[in-house]
Amino acid sequence: MHTTLNLRLTSKILATIVCIIAVAMLPAGLASLYFQEYATVRALGMSAFLFFVLGMFVRTMAQPTKLSIQLREGSLIVGLSWILASLVGCIPYLLSGYTNSFSAAFFESAAGFTTTGGTAFDLGLMPRGLMLWKAICTWLGGMGILVFLVTLLPSLGISGQKIFRAESPGIKIDKISSRISDSAKILYLIYIGLTVIEFLLLALGSNMAPFDAAVNTLGSISTSGIFSHPQGLAYYDSVYVELVISVFTVLSSVSFVLYPLLLQGEFKRFFKNPELRVFAAIIATASVVVTCNLYLSHMYDSFPESLRYAFFQVTSFSSTSGYAITDYTSWPLFSKLILMLLMMIGGCSASTSGSIKIIRIIVMFKLIQRSIYKRMHPRAVLSLKLSGTPLQEDVIAQTASFIFAFFAMLAAGSMLLSLQIPDIEITFSTALAMLSNTGIAFGATDYSGYFGFYNAPLKMVLSTSMIFGRLEIFTVLMLFVPSFWNADRAKSL
Image (cartoon, rainbow, N blue to C red; front, side):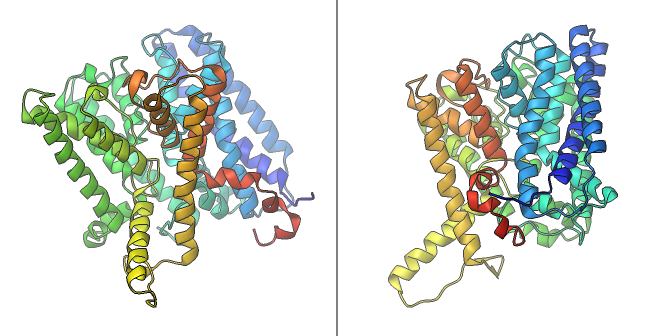
């Protein structure tokens, strides 16, 4: 089979990603130096130097004759970038001597870049430099390394539209600016702005140390659920800290393309967005229902205490951040099922959250509603509308096929995990935790997000599931379809 891939341009862009990741290792290296973790300093320093030199060498050698990116190259770049990032990111764990297990190091790196946030390590023993490195990985993965890269491509004379489309799959991504690179810059400026505000609130508004504030901020703003203390956020036992982190995980789960409306003073358009309104309604309803269930089940002594834990865990699962401040695995089954349902739904499109996304749930319910109506009125011609705009049938079909693929992969993941652990609650919730990029599960996995008890092959299965979930399945799956690489289709793609 002959292809017309622009391999030189693809290599140049992937090498640029490697350089970005190498530079991102430096803050973690400086933190290691401050905390006198010299093995970690050497590991991060050597990794940064090696990959920066390697990336620059490939960038120099790869001189593309044409600078246009087709959808095929864009999809290939996106698919390979998360695998490449996870491979590069796992090297400091190995070089530091913290672990000699490649599967565990790759799992940890993939959990960072995909914003899943689970761990295969004992957090009580992890050097703070590596802890910060993972938090930085989650921050880069939250908005997407490639969204950041798109802002740099125009300086190379390359358009990033195809990459942006493959990196941000969904029903519809409204344009913020007429140029994709300008849209990417605006998204990252908002992302950085929220990060700075949350850091200041945690560092100045509580007794949290600056290092802890940095790690917890990077973990919550990326909805990865990374925390700085082995006991998690429960260590601080602070309603203020919990409220700040809850608010910012929710803000990060709102579509980032809506925030420019607030900056432009278009408050009415912002609050009338159907996806935002449904997301807010789900959080409010689930918080009330879980609170009542916890209080009536006598899980906690008072209604305010029940509300405190219910609201935090509802926002944690809805945003797919995966934080835990209490042992939710001991909650009544009704509340646990609600949390699992929230994990499946996820946050809004074009946000840092994972899973199915609210917009697809809305379309699914509208599709069910139309099917019921057409059964009663067979001759009726109805179109599905979103914010008054009719949805194309191919968009509806893509939504339905995505939801089917999501549950098919969930079933496949559960079956593979059952080869080691014959417990439906553990295997299903673990598979869901990986595919939804939430990072915490139910059963014997505990609420700490620890998955180190899986064997090496299954750790790789979990890592693969995280990457599929982060790239919303089809971006990766279509790379394995032979017709996608057919040279006769190159012009149309």
